[in-house]
Length: 83
Image 1 (cartoon, rainbow, N blue to C red):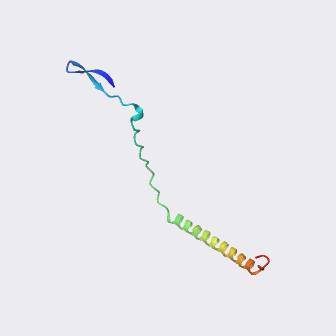
Image 2: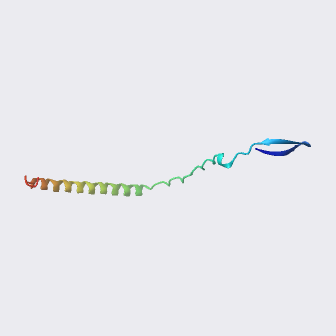
Image 3: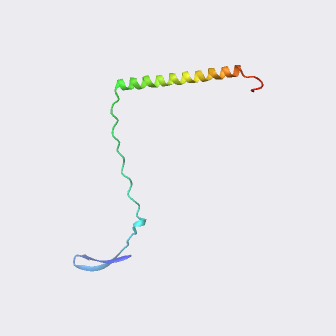
């Protein structure tokens, strides 16, 4: 507790004011993060992205089909000794 003298309309008197340690005062809330608005995507860019997405899916399907075919061939030549 800290005492100090205050003047009010010529009268001098002592008042008691509590001093709160800084560790007990919570920090201020964080500032809100403002994000920039997304620019409009062009139709051409959307179509290009769609093309490459479809191309990648076809390539993955082709690879999986090749892996399955190879597994079928190995299974066909599998003998009791290897199993």
